[in-house]
Length: 334
View 1: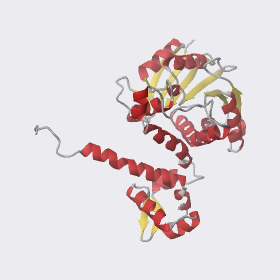
View 2: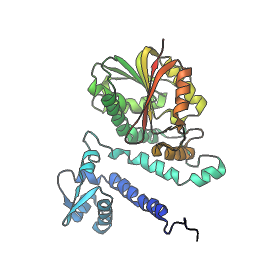
View 3: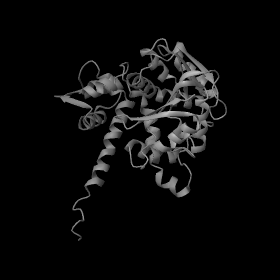
View 4: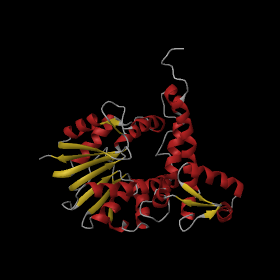
């Protein structure tokens, strides 16, 4: 045996061991266990009766969530750890529990990676045109929490007090605009979405506090710019579903709707370092994207910069978030 040959498959075993914990989290979100533990620790039997399930099956998941670091055990009772209490309890500001449908879709897609490579086609294709209205609405609702979190993150990191109008292009549910307006009530927000998505988003906005202040405009950013001129535009999780040429076109049309001196913000997990080995989120999403989109991919910072420059933007900066996602900000030049 070569002297540098490892004695144990440490990395392989670590990766294998990380998967069950993620699936335990997913099941806990799907069952809304963390919300049911919001007020006090409860026993497995009490929770099982509440859910209408068998105690012995549920208790296996509860112990797994203890090992995963999301629950504490207090004698015969289980309770949320602080992180679960903050982000997985329905109704609390940072709630992420409704993202389970999206996570399940992405993780199922990853199981097709080898075959997607062999066939040269996305084996878990997201065919938005073929999706029913209910499927699309579920997807928009699944991304709603992420959109709100992104809006709050933007509001914390950038000063929007000088902006009076902002358009969220391909913004899904419009949650990002709601969050931005929480911190900047004078900001007028417009959601620009494909016709069907715009109609579905209007229904979600109607039932979300603050949603009545968001204007919805129908359109295709690959075909035409939005109507009017805005102080800023946001493209969140949009360019990563597009081919490079379509991404360049989307940026050009978005930039044409921004006043000189205004800002364009590009947000997403699919923004790669130029060496393509970081951040890890973008690297792994780049694998996921080949399973669900015909041409979507994680694009590099240099690619984004080239598209922005061609669209008449400069002063380009990039921030890497703790999650591994990124924000690219640029200014529309005169």
